[in-house]
Image (cartoon, rainbow, N blue to C red; front, side, top):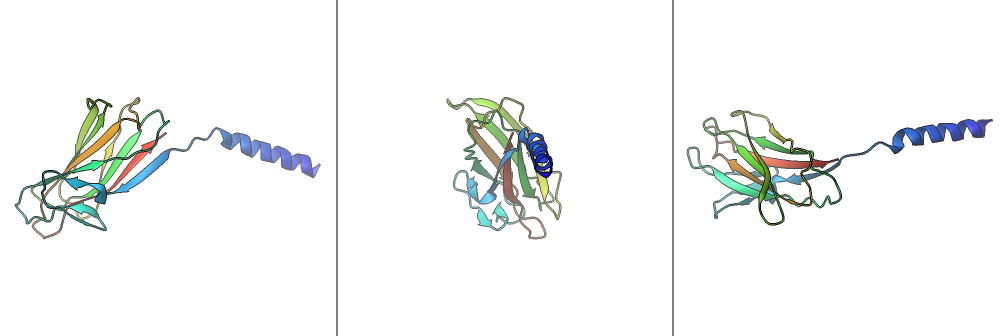
Length: 162
């Protein structure tokens, strides 16, 4: 009798978890982001930041997203963790899905809500049907140092597929 109960319990547990799908995630450091047009950026434990003095122009970095998540039906979210320490300029990111011929299939821009001491999350939610096999690009504009001398950063980028 004990063997039958154990087998039934095993089958019930197996049946309840067999249909559970797990999302695939990849988290990338902001150090993958490269400056556009030779502007200077610095890298560190908090990813990429603009080392220019307060009042200097913002810099734009491009972050290629090497997804390698083929076979998935779509990209469900891209979450960019940032720090915005500049009181006069916000950090913003443009996420773009490109077709294999380079045409823009989808894009959206998100911006921080002003200077803050802690992290701010920019959460992109691409529509269904955006494919990880296409090329994905993230361009972020990072303000110069805040008046306090603290830097704004693009820290991490987390991509989720179903």
